[in-house]
Image (cartoon, rainbow, N blue to C red):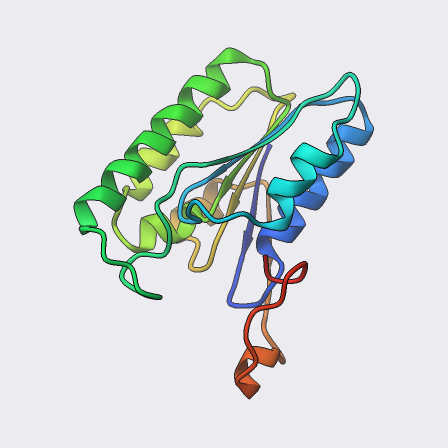
Length: 175
């Protein structure tokens, strides 16, 4: 099964983490591969180290180098592109391993919209998701080809956000 959480509203990564928690509750294994988010720590990183769940695995693997071209990013675009390619190759390896029941490709839609990887590369990578496995694609601007391929698509729609009043991101809410 392939699920997409997309849209301009908050909650895409959070919804994917919720699916991971549900799977963990049923004794399954869950992996999140982050395509854009960089080396800084977020709540899900701390969760993974503080709340080890016996008999299951929960991993968040940051493979992105941070936001591309914004918020002080000084890295060359080629470095971001290499990181996204490496993250996609890592996904293919982990999917083939069969170890994970749920694999989240966090912000993969953004990596595609930034042309760090192509939608075709992602579609080829998710082409053979076994029936009993779940792959979740998150991020704004999900390509129409992803929506056609997906079994379930949810669009988060921003109605109101404190950022629009000039407030900065809050620990435990945005990261």
